[in-house]
Length: 419
Image: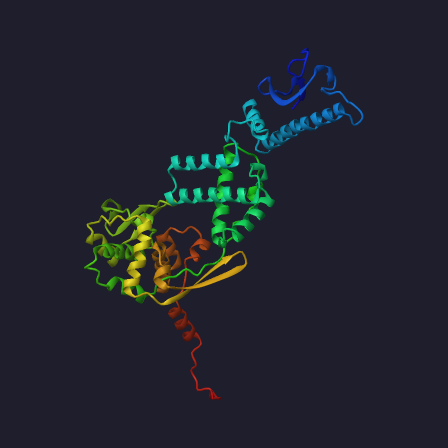
């Protein structure tokens, strides 16, 4: 694109603004942008369209060099946006040029094009879109707060062009050492940043594609599952004198025998049931799932006249721990997490580690253990690939002992006896 510098008032008897001019062929007109730099027309080289060259180290020579240095930023900014539009094979418009130059040279309205203010726009967009859960919106807000803290504490100036390899290294180090985030928390936060950057790129807030190289770190966790005996304890416990916990128990058990997410089975009603099949559209993925009813799920639905109790997920997570404590799931369990390469372990009673999602994990594990084919279980739970499905598969210690003994059972008397 042809560009040049021109004076705003070339015949003025005094300093005048230097303008950056670009001819946009597709629109047949010029894009004019004020550089903010001023110079007297007598000091301007009209042929080469730059300040007169002044030799030496005097004040005028230094001032001209400073102006020249500032002016070089404008062709560089033009080259950047032209290259980016060629990359995405789109036509560069005057509006796009103006938006880009306003952002680069900080001439947007206050906060309009800044990284964190655009993150706020992203969150508002997701709220209005209505396709994600409130918990996801909450996570985006948490990530925005972490980014604000990171910028304040480290003095790292967050701009779209600075979301690069240096950023991800410093941000990861900050999250691990200052925020003490686990690998999985860091991974989720990086994933949220990539989602934001992708949205911002589609909305033309930036053209920096470095974020696509960011790797979403994670670490295997030892989340708990329940054994068949434990869920039977929960099912058979008499909560008749505490209707609140009885409703929580029934909801949890429904998840254990259907494999559904709490966000899906907590809102089902009679219209979702056709004969022996429960058909739903999942909130998380919008997939249509057909789930066969069994004796337990059918009984629970009938008990509540096909209108399951409504309990907020936050309260449910709190109450299910109370249920499991009453039942007696108090045995100590080891929780292992990773902060970077550092391994952290703590011993907690089992009931404290049980959440709404424990039901889904338990269904998958016990269904496979009971002989259901993996492809059938995947069809019921809605997992689309083996990798995500396998994260839920946890074989309980009893099953491992039985399998080990079945294969490695000693059928003959050993020649040497243990002393």
